[in-house]
Length: 89
Image: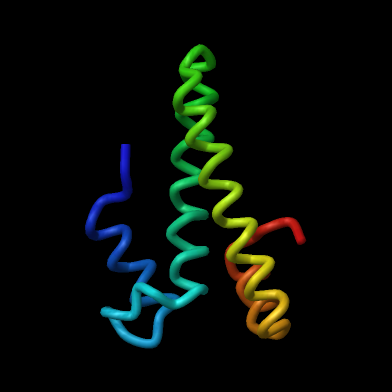
């Protein structure tokens, strides 16, 4: 199950410069975090769904790469984003 248009629009407007700023790294990380939360609850409810587990690991890897890029380019933005999203770093 993917994010709804309303959910993604609200995340884009919250983390982007404007509502069409979907390429911003902060927006991409926020969207991936929402997707990780959805997939986590799905995997907990359906433990035998191996494709969902694989998708979850894939999305986590994408988010990790983007966070590493953001950490290397702009450390203050990285720290603020992690605090705002509630991630563990």
